[in-house]
Image (cartoon, rainbow, N blue to C red; front, side):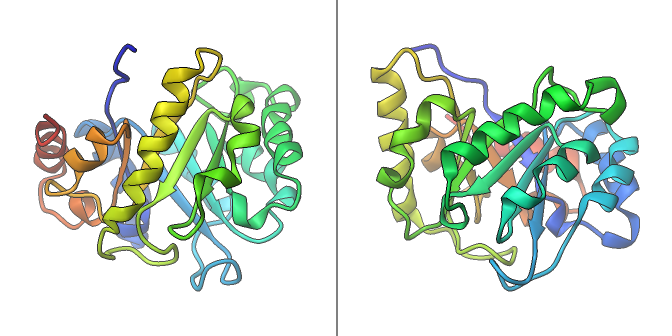
Length: 236
């Protein structure tokens, strides 16, 4: 199978919230591929972050794809709001969805309701992602993989940045990569979020991951360009 391009998606959970617009401009200038936006509701995870109004304002500051990760309860109530705010990828948690197939379909349908030029979205259509917490096995999402554009593996327990990488989660990346290789009809990216740095990124890449969410490894450094370059260089 053709190897997918490795992409770095800095998470603005680690950014300076007082100057998020400037942070986005700097990340695009310094080589980020996507912008990862962790949406937390204080219920599904023990933290509060960004809502649609903030994301809509941030959309003005960069042309990079917005990778919006909904760590929220009842995500079906908010899909159209995040689509209208400018999300390019909307990822929901398998653990938070009672009707996951229907929910992923709603993400794809949101594109038709909102012309791209009115939202600032980068892709022609909003991509639908599904995420798995560290304790959730891949079998939880196998029946719906034909409509998944992105599978996000949490390599830490969600809620806070700066946590230690859980290496056992890489088995899920291997399983999903093997599934995709054996089924030509499947076409999804594999993303990982949590504890990614120059010491862990190659492990994840070797397991089949091609999109890497990096928070502290980029945004807690003084030189974003060097940090992103070093992450990519660490991939053999």
